[in-house]
Length: 177
Image (cartoon, rainbow, N blue to C red; front, side, top):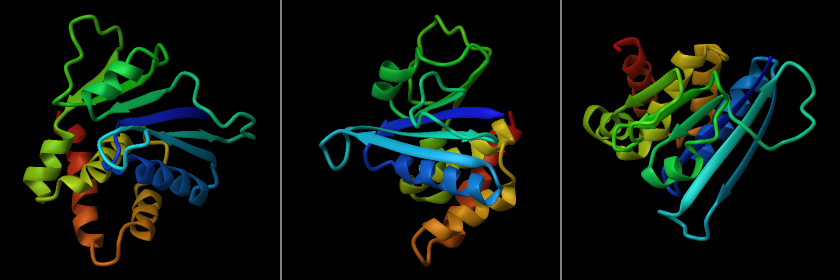
């Protein structure tokens, strides 16, 4: 088993944290994990991505070449990374992203991640955790308990309940499709 994930969007959306959480939950699950990140020089609003490789074998190269799962929370991130995904990969885009008509991916999900964070949770800043809930439901790579434990270990103290609600809303986005 080897899975490559790329989470992309804008700086400030928490996707680097989301990648770290996925990697840590994999390690808790006795799965090898490597996480890397890149972002523009802007503190907020510039392009950013977090890449995670999960494998039951040794990971020799730490960069994602062609992801099994690609998350795009912004139009810019889709424009930059949306064409580079494995044939049987999963593409998740926020409902604000225009993907055009020529989509050749079987597992494509356009879901209101940011809107859910804003309207159901009341905080756009938890869109990354909403996305983690959706990713969990679509991939089933890591157990819910291990992912929740990794989230709780990384989110700011006092925001645990808020983040657990965000995670559950992300799961519901997929379950209710």
